[in-house]
Length: 69
Image (tube, rainbow, N blue to C red; front, side, top):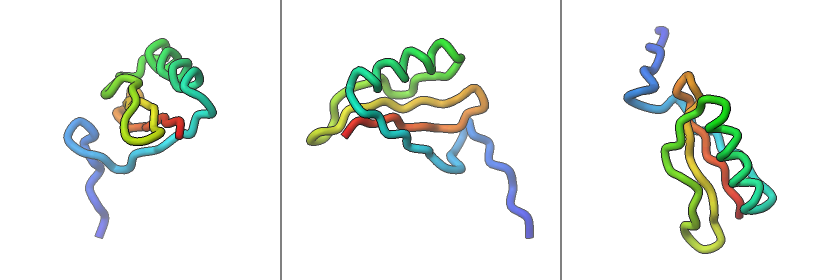
């Protein structure tokens, strides 16, 4: 049985997480994502103890986290 292709506007296939080495690198990634046509879902911010990052989708709707921990 073959599965259906997910409509990424209504759900997730998978969320990729990318690790940054600093808060500055997170902010640089965010700028580059915007320039490349990605959509920021959650802007860069501190959350939890020692976590800083943001969430975006690429132009095809795939979701990514960029975190500095």
